[in-house]
Image (tube, rainbow, N blue to C red; front, side, top):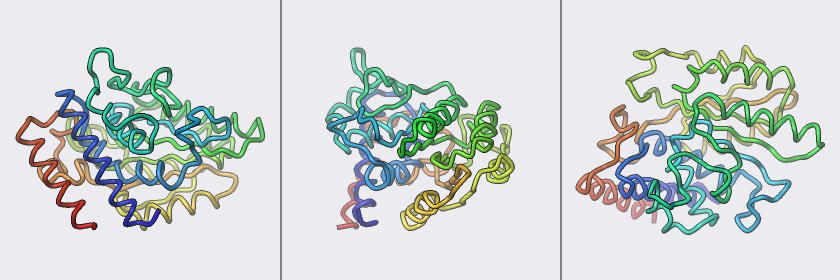
Length: 276
């Protein structure tokens, strides 16, 4: 897809995020919106996947380590064709297969159940090692939150991945500088995140994670790296695309009311129209 096509799709994915969280009256819009462009690129350009064969053996794998950002993940999966977009309106409803956190047993396209912060990178590292041991060519992608990088298990997994030279593993850190209780600096800053990954023998790339030129360049670079995993530190804007949500920690885990939802959808509709 061209960058323009990716931008249009990112608007649709953001619409899905807002619709699902508004319908559920709960959920996590802020980080889902900041990561929407990365998710768009992964699912519509980068990964070898097939919605008709969600368990295809040689598919690329994706683990959403920051599992509370499921609304963004589900919107990407739905728009990619893994299940109907209309199902997004059932997020967190009783009887819905779209739970508050990703569930690999019931949601097509989900490779790993997640939600307990810090654990997803360990699972992704195991998948990458399995590919190496089985002489498979598939790649593994894992998205972590910057606040999540305060978890020690992230660094245990990073140490293992670097030691094993897992060049088929790409970690993306959604570095929007806000977590549930405030800024990283106020809570327990994991900075400098890039230097930490570098110390564990990762190839590190810093990008504007809401810019498709830089996103494309980073993933292309990652595929050329040999004998070491890659960490893409994606500097993003929490709540990206919705004016009143941008850079506001309060929108980490709060659903918009009816009026706020209307304003948000109008902004996204305008953004989409400007791309046409």
